[in-house]
Length: 345
Image (cartoon, rainbow, N blue to C red; front, top):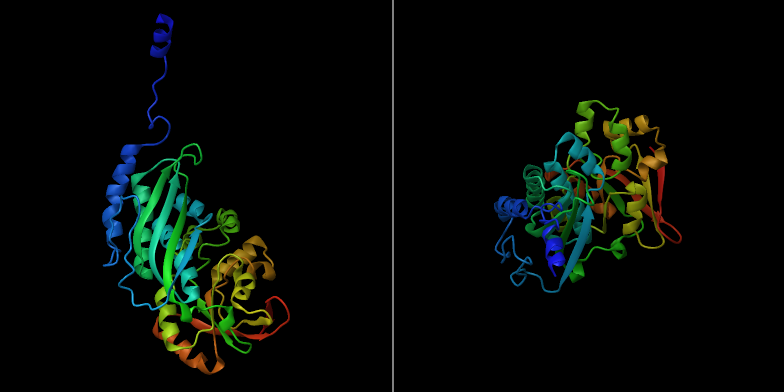
């Protein structure tokens, strides 16, 4: 048996750190972000960061027939530009926004959020900057950051490369759910201004950004606008039939998602000012107008449908909420699956 003993002695001893996972760094990261997450907690949160699950007490919510609404999303290749410019807090806001803005399309109030942060190497400063943005996004949307997961995977992500995913849960009264059944032919469509490309189209933008000046490139990292408080207030004031979050697919693909079968949308091009950043994208990339409309939001982050007689009040409510909004079109009778048509005005 002596040869077995000798063989055991010559084996290489591995630690988890040698394999690319630094447990100590992970523990330091949790300690660093715990007080940040607690800034978003309210009386409904009954657990702290670091447990096996996040606990949220719904018994105190004033809903008679509550329906939970969930959403998950990421930031996509916008993280590439953010990493290159070392501007990371805005990415955290983007992550929350992409989920929260989806939830409110059902008329729901967002409740809590969880994140998934995967990286090749856990850098404490980089990770903390991202979480600071997530915390800010949660504050803007009224959500508690209930927990999350950090994964250090050197074999998947090289160096400090990383990716993010977010998960949000909200609640709405069953009889107040906003769905395509609420939208009528003849309804008016109001567009609410975006803060830029938000978090869509960056596979194209990243290629164009290599030949852009610094000021322009930095403007491409403007965080996604969070519309939660604005939309919840609008719902209180007017009869909102449908709400479309203009993400990947642009106006062309997202507006039909809120229309019933047999209805189309007529959008009036020229009824809102398209921000210069989109003109630059179109020119720098030689992008066709139809491609722009089905890839980017072109300055409109949300579209809501309201009855014609409530347009004035809706626009006034949005202005009082600090939003720039525009009457951009209306719904028309169609046949079959919903679609969007455009005309210049």
